[in-house]
Every structure is written in structure tokens, then in C-alpha cells.
Length: 196
Image 1: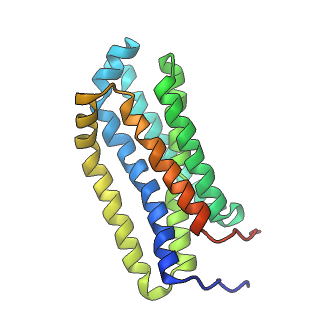
Image 2: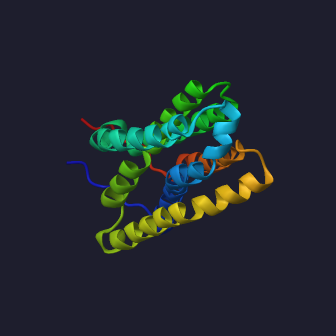
């Protein structure tokens, strides 16, 4: 069995910080969009019964892919999985902004769900694999805090953005956050080891 590489505590917290940015994107993904449903109805000229699919498909997609990515995370590699996921989030957010019709918008929401599904397996994998036992609980607590904050902040932030900008702004905000998390992951994550 390959020994776990020793990583300085400061670098571990920076690794976690990049993952927490991804967590914030994922948890805001539903709560922030729920505020924008009336705007989506007007923009795409669709009924509420169709609009709610933008939330349902997103939730369903990441719920299905989390266990899949969890089982494959060591094989794919934590760094590779997370950076790929955040890249998909970036592309999916751009597609949401520029989608010319509602079906394509739903495809973009599915892409966001796939990208966000990479975050939780990476966080849990990195905490259990790289973090010393004595600080694993603390790291998990920080993740739980940010996860809760994302759900709480989403509606407030969504309301603010919709009051001052077009509805597309709720997806524009994902892009700098995703790019920040990718940059931090590239700098601070250790090189992946190929798993079996």
C-alpha cells in the first residue's frame, strides 16, 4: 500500500479552501435559481410547471453522480476529478447565460449538476486521505458550515442580483468562483496517483 504523502498543514487548509469554493457554488445552485423562476418564465415564455424542471434536473443529476464519482474518485484522482468538475461548471454556467431556448438551458443545468457532483467525493476523499486524523473533524466542520451558508445565502444573493441585474447574473457569478477554485486546485493539490 502506498504511504500517504505528508503535506504541510497550511497547504492542506488551502486545498480545503479551494474545495469550499466549489461547495458554495453547488449549494447556491438550487436556492439561487428558485428565486429566478419568474424571470425564467418570462424570458423563455414557459409555464411554471416547465420552469421547475430547471431545479429538478439539477438536483437529480448531482444526486445520481455523487455516488458514481465517489466510487471512481481514487481511480480518476482527486485533483483530476475536481478540476474537471469545476471546468464543467464553468462551461455549464456560460451555457445557462447564453442558452437561446429552454431545452438548451436545461441541458446546461444538467451539466452544472454533473460538475457540482465532483465536489463532495473530492472533499471527503481529500479529508480522509490527506488530513491527519486529529483535524479531520475540524475540516469536515468547515465544509458543513460553508454548505449551510450556501443554502442560506443563495436566496438573498439571488434577490439582490435580480433586483439590480438581469437573471443571467445568477450564473455569471459561478464563473469567477469556479475559475478561482480551479486555480487554487492546480497550485495546491498534490499530483494524482493512478488508482486501480
